[in-house]
Image (cartoon, rainbow, N blue to C red; front, side):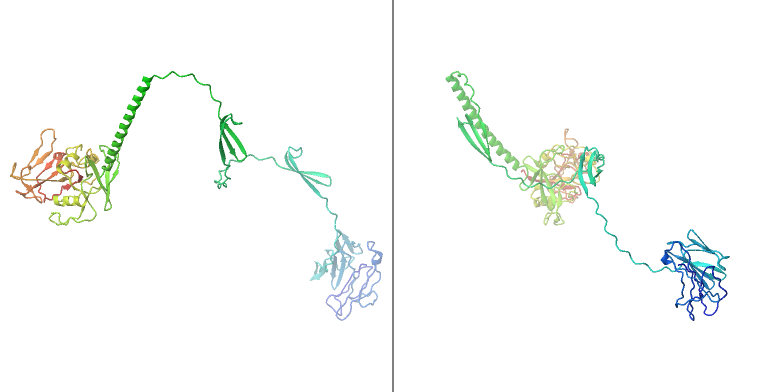
Length: 556
């Protein structure tokens, strides 16, 4: 049953104006605070409603009814069908129109329904104009009307759970090999409810690039020991080896190595001649004697070699083989106060390889140079400035502190043999330093080396020798400094004051003092320096800037 409700809005005793009820509708007052609402209704023929829902009767909320009075604010109520509805508020009255769903409302006088929209005609329904959607509330606002959606009703109860659906069919799976007509590269066949489905492998991709080598694996476990082999000799006539041989048993395996059959017998030899046999015996005896003699010679040579090896260097020194131009023999070395002392072998004695320098921190002794208190050790060390301005006494003491002696004039002369004499030279290119501003470091005379390997024996510094000479009366000049050259064949090497005065520190020249020999010349001698240069002008107490020394071991 559909009802149109016209209700009084906000008033209790009077209306704002007359309310016109649509033709065919029943009007009754709406409820107020002072007066219960009176509803009038009428049955609307709605073929979409079942007969039991068509309600012609009308009643108010108090159970009373009255006639069609237009003197009161009235309402016509349309029970809501399933779905939303529209409430039209006309002045002080409301019209609620159900939505066109479940079932759709029927058109009536002044009301048109089209596509879910309800239209109210002002000529048929006074003072009502406009169009609202089903379920909207139409209310007055000033001089016009507006639509508002109604408040939704409460949520309905949840329906019952439906019955369990039937179980799905099982799927059977089986692999498919390569070459199958459905899957050329293999795959899987799936069977469900009599239908076959194939899941095929793709074609193999291209071969990838060679990967880098992996790390070395750990060593494998030690394998079990091999079976031992037992060998047994077999005599001739054995069932396995008719001519004898060997039987080898390894675990449960037995093998045989058999001798071959003997070859045919050779022809008979020629009878021996007795004289030939005697000759052979004599020859054998001779050879045996020769072999014994050779053995004796070898033993002798080994003894000599051992003696030579033992004499390569002085006791306590080590031999070091070198390969340098213009040099033969090994170098003998010894550590002294952190420095390497070097000597070379000359015949049956040894001489310092370089001009003497000082090893360690010893003292030079008394200021007079008499050698008393001289604790400095004389060494032959490469790469240092040689010791200069020393007396013969200091030089001799320094050699003794190193276990050596000053070389004799003869030892010095033999050791200088083979040294290249450049004449006047500043020492460039390793040549002898005979004409320069001063002495140079040791080890730079690579082209001023004797046959035995001693360096700078010509030039650089005059070198004290152990020999003393008796000076006589003035023989040549009053100053004793005149030089006398050697005869032809000795170059321009000179001698000084063989029979004259001596100089001490460095002048004046004094009669009656002995002279100690110095050899080789210095960096101030020019071409007069050489292997035959000898000066007998200095007293052993002399001390000059270009005087040095060289030590020896062994010899005289």
